[in-house]
Length: 228
Image (cartoon, rainbow, N blue to C red; front, side, top):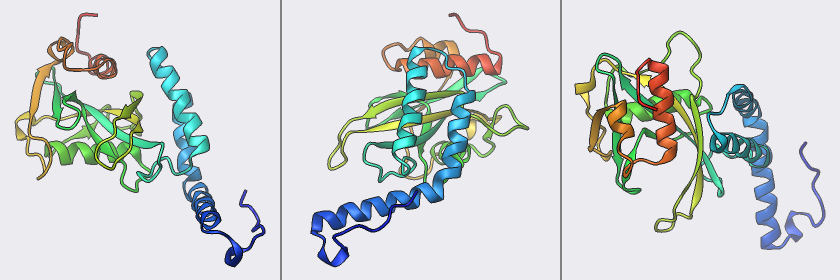
């Protein structure tokens, strides 16, 4: 509920009080504008079955951050923000696509920030298309409202004047029938690898546990057999 104006009034407030008042007003606007979208996100989280204790903790953390930070979908949220990513598969060859993240120096799924969007699934598709240039990318399975297959919270380290912050990553499954049509947008990483799911999972020195979990889920979703 919006709060009533309090003394001292604006003209009598100190600079610090004015900043705090502006912050409160901004968060009230986020609560009003984003309340419905955030409620839908929480409902999706409530319906999702976590694969392990780490994912379960991360899902609870996401819900707690949504409750306390109504601007959690904005990059201006200082503690962190929601991101969108995807595991991409080429069903005919049973392969998945990894790309080398230049700043983090490891293999990752494609993905990025939510740019003033409330549809996180659409943001994941947009980011994947921008990063890969694959023209026919689509959510899998088709014919239903896309939902994340995995959730992960991780810390992005401080770089230059960007502070360390959290990425609350919503992860989807995408499919392409044109794996050779890679054409990343200008400025995007150009280092990609098409690997079988088993080959990708075997790169223990180059992928982290959360990506390993995502790949196992995606392989199962697409019906690919992998060693456990």
